Length: 167
Image 1 (cartoon, one colour):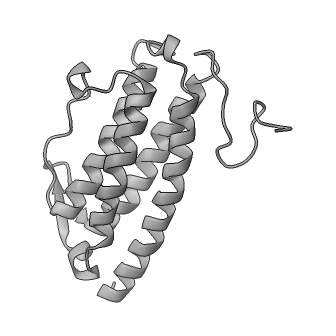
Image 2 (cartoon, rainbow, N blue to C red):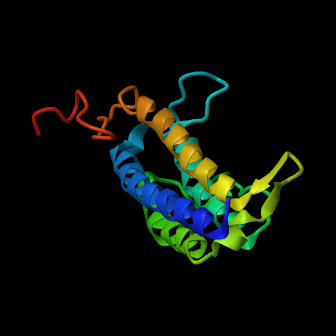
């Protein structure tokens, strides 16, 4: 793709990510504090684990794209400081838009450069941007499926839910 085409695709993906961020925040707001340890199976992350994963990884992937290099993924243990959905919301609102802004400022040429993901794969930054959107939506979908078993209500994601119909 030509540099101007890459930039056009990036602009589309960035707008898409911005839209998805609002939905992610609605899902975070719906997570009940009392059941953060909920997990549907032993191999699954807990509710708190997913909240942390989405918050930290959205920021990490975007900053790695902007840096042109991937570093080790963030520590999602208690040391990260995210202990409640409110903590995640505050961090997400502060750091993810800033990281996305860094990607927005990149040229099509910069986004065309190949980036190595810790020896696992190499592809252009624009491809990682597309992957970032999908990664966030995927894990948010997991978290939204936890909400009812955790005692919460599923907010509108791509339309009304059984919990929002009639509102």
